[in-house]
Image (cartoon, rainbow, N blue to C red; front, side, top):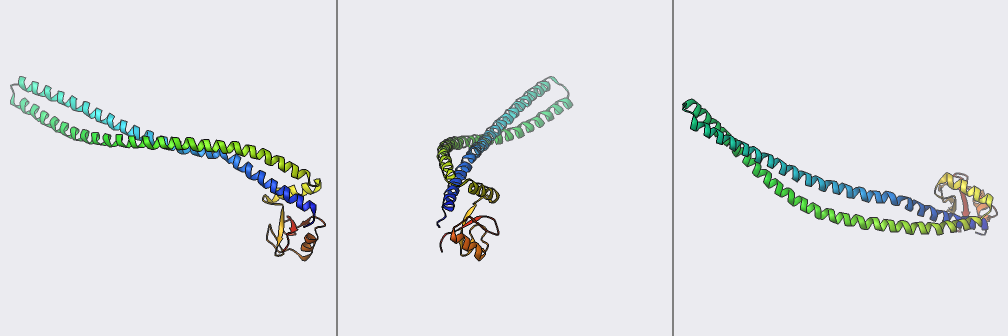
Length: 236
């Protein structure tokens, strides 16, 4: 390949590819940091859920305990009333209320015991969850630091890459650059590709003999008649 314009365009394309890759990675850093933060927020929310569940369990137990105390006070009143009544029917009715209330207390105490056990299990889950959250926080902190460090490095690399890109572009004829840019904008990946086994290295369609001969002669820029990319003879 003797055409200097093609050689210069290949250098420019390599520099463009480098700038595009660095830019894309740099632009992706904020989203990656946000992903780390979102993952940590989700874990924090789950941990808060464990704490809230334990608190609700304990709150429910305390309500039951107050209910038990209220019913025990009621039993004391019933017994006091029994001491004052002289009627057998009233005495029997009060006795019935006492027995019924004692049954309610027994059921409540069973429920309270279940809640105490559930609360203990909840506390254990909270303790384990706290350990996991602390690890997650440290991991997120390290990951964000790594990403921020990578961002700074990418920004510095991008400055150098753009300088090299500008230098490469300055070495190419303006008309050739304009044509190259139009093709690159249209295709998005590459504007100049090699010929491989008589086919375009971009669209992989077979090229005419005239196109291959023109590219091989390297006397002028040659385009693929199928996709419009510039093609060059890479030697086969």
